[in-house]
Length: 456
Length: 98
Image 1 (cartoon, helix red, strand yellow):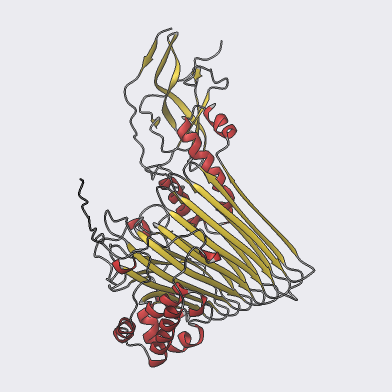
Image 2 (image 1 turned 180 degrees about the horizontal axis):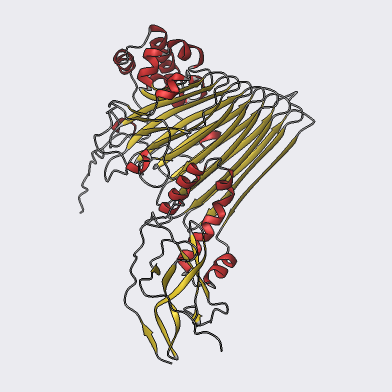
């Protein structure tokens, strides 16, 4: 006779997975108090917290989240709001290499902000400040614009960032002021087991023009994970021209969620460029709202992922007024067992005649285990429009590689150059030489080209 | 024909100084020396360059690693390739035609 042995398994140790991040009203009150925020702002945070709690945790039965699974999100593992100490990567500050950047803000959660070259901006009436300074000195501005572009109702993570954001960058350019030199802001947030919440608010008043390069970055930690949730709000007023460049270079231990939207008014012009190479998982919602006649928005993005990285970009081009133009081109390369998702939609509202909309996503799959999903979409409710879209997923072409090898290049170098050529159309759309070179350097780094060379 | 293979390549340029047109350089490549096919450093002149690539013209016949001769004797390198370095030797000139 055999005896049965009952084995009881105790639950595995470690953080609970798949749940929502446990935000509390005490956390919100504490942040608001520390920043000495006015009552209206604290109230706004608490409303956002209520919205966060009301939203269910996204899951793969939601259309927007169908290809991004959060079941392994270790929600309870992130409790510390301050970034680790440590030197900032000098490349981020533009202090090395041939390219020097203009006025700069270096923002680090839990640490003092570093500023550079802001005297001239102040003389022109430009506000280029970190969150704490903006709260202290620009109450009217925040009251008018904060949450006017991205609302806590936009999604669970938008609500969370609205409630919890303690670091950020605010840029306001007064009417008619043209800034020739690009502004540069960096959110540098090293550490594991952290929860970072940030926001960016950019307002270009009538007829103003500016370029802002915003980078989010951290080194990859050998152990542990970190959580970042952020909001980007861009308001381009009548006749203004904004070039906004985002560089996402989080360490590969970071779960990154962002809600971003631009509102472009009458005859406004927005050039929006994205470069993403970092994070463990990113879910990014990017909306372009063309709300005034003659508004133009161009979105150019590239991403390179490897290992088990997962990048999910959800873009929306909303033509809400007549004679508006949007143009989106996203290109990505995938290595290892990485995965990318791009879902794009062009929406043309009733009455938005003479709309010209374009969207394309091209993917280069460089490993048999990598996977790219590309889902373009159109929703057109006007009858005099031109809208086109396209999406491709393919492997590296052998022919250009062959021709490069016929000039003595080893196969590996030839393949790297062919990848560079794939990204060239994106680089051509990046309006600043400074940014183009930074992007090129990021691509070279990701493709394993140590000591990548910059142009002088 | 015996093939001689040179020692490991070495990089001598820093990232801040890419090669430019007119620079005298050496490239690690297959070429002919004294009727022998060798893989070694060979002097040449940069005839085209951008931030990423360099084209180098040689006086001698050069070959791809799979044996094909390059008819115009121009090889390409990446700016940061370990197969190209600054030449410290005197420039080799062709003898004058008579």
